[in-house]
Length: 386
Image (cartoon, rainbow, N blue to C red; front, side, top):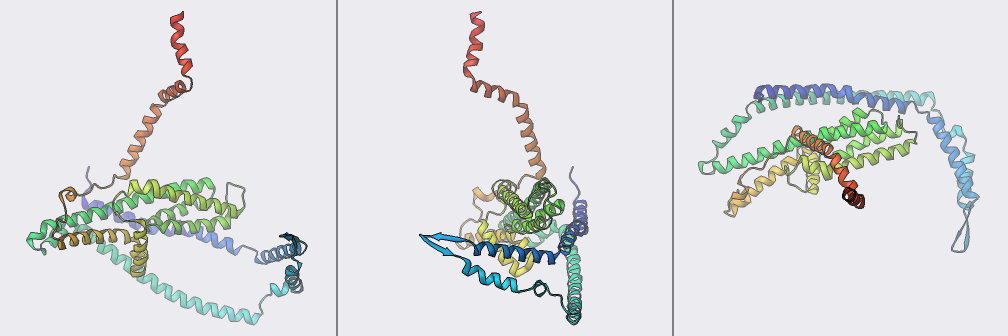
């Protein structure tokens, strides 16, 4: 059953608004927990432990003699001055509390700075909210009239060029739709894999970090590197809830998991989900993301890949027209097939899995016969001998 266009647009924007409203509820709790962990650290004890460790290390170095190319190297000359300076400096000098006057001056400066930042932030939030509302309204009107926009644009084009322009617009439309459909599927897949892995590792805030990993897929190539940063920070600060390992070791485990996910994504998932929607080299896309970020900020980074693919399509058309060639040869005239939807891909995977399970006994019997061919021969000869 085909959903009416108006209803599909309404449901899409309701889902988008719901995601925008739920994003703070999902993302803010782990951020607040991280700040609470940072605020709860005993920095004085941390500095004291660091000083004791430094002193013990210097003492060990001063008592160590190293042989190098037959010569004995005494390291006490390097360690003794640093050790003497460390011992002559009292702990109160290292961890000295500020005077009340300094505290008052610092608080007053902090309040002034906070007020300025809050005013600027409030203005930015209001401007961003208005821009978001206007963008939603523009996109709604554009979505409702998208099917009428193409024919209206073609009326401006001279009649001899209208068939070519219609083909070009169709190819551009296929590129954009295939890219965004593939990106949404990719976001869901990577978010799900990250959620399962983070939960298995015992990473606090696994769901929020998985949402971040899924959303960062909107930024080609760089999104995976951005998504791993909060995961590593959480691993260093809070550790694992399942594994009794050092926080640093756990952070390395998390980094390795995210690296593995990125390799699986680049080598297996992206070619099958996005397919040939963009047809651009990853280095070209990375350069486009950098330029798009400089020119248009976040929107430029998000739309860099389809914009560059569209520019490539238009430039190919103009190049062919300049050389008086057919811009759409018969072999390339038919539009490319759009990527298979996520539902169809899941159905295909489920069918293959059922077929694999059903063929399990026969596969096992063939495997046993390969391992023991002589036993098979004996089983065939024995009834004849009897």
